[in-house]
Length: 371
Image (spheres, rainbow, N blue to C red):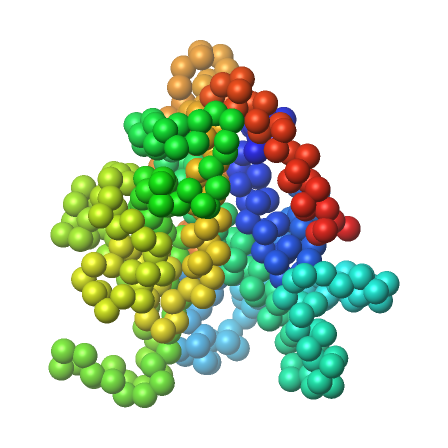
């Protein structure tokens, strides 16, 4: 939030910085301190290449027709280059951790916990390459997806100012200008939860979920689904179904006023007809990180709306509003808004000073993940 005060034009970058910093802190014990950090810059450089490789139509269907793998083309070179780039990234991350641990510095994070466990037992179930990539995959899954949804929410708040006003009225009643919302306020700020749900419904980053493989022959409504079939959850199609979500093209958090719980509670409920959305997938392979993602997005939206008004940008020459294109998204397997700008304006002097006061405490807490 202080970054936005200092450099509001880079809201797109800071919206991506936050989720990867959270993920790397939890998993590696190191945070992405700024936009020049290895944990931010190198990560997104790899993810942009990874997204291009997996973009629909980027490669021939060599899995379905193996002979196509032997056809010439730049696509194969790009796959190998991205694979190498990914290995370099996560091997370097492991090297940073190993050098820290050699100095006797262990941190409260997943990789230290697992390395301690394996060293104690003398059991290394993974080769180093596999272990390093496993830890990296957790960052990939937890950071990029949340960043995409946070950007969608920021765009939606700028495009639909009535949503901001409704949420801010709720926040002001509960928190006031001197007390930023915390997750303890979840039950008292139900409309923030509605905004998060609508972002996942309106523009899900995983529009077709991730592919599932059928492990044995199955039948559904008289149709045979053979073993080995690839199944996609049609998330986008369901979210744009007028019968499930009337006026589906419009960003309208009011549609979730009757869904006050977190997404995981509806996903695990036997009352499947009362599902809120399918933004995290479905079934036994639903996103395992949805608990963290939900809380991340709730905190970001609540604090941004407590502190700032978010507007569409102005043309510097005419002073007129430049409308954001709410359909300007890339076509990667995990879709994200194309780069955009918004105006971020502190709501009051009191809020501005409260944001600045919080910075010292935040930096003190985060110092355990520096270096």
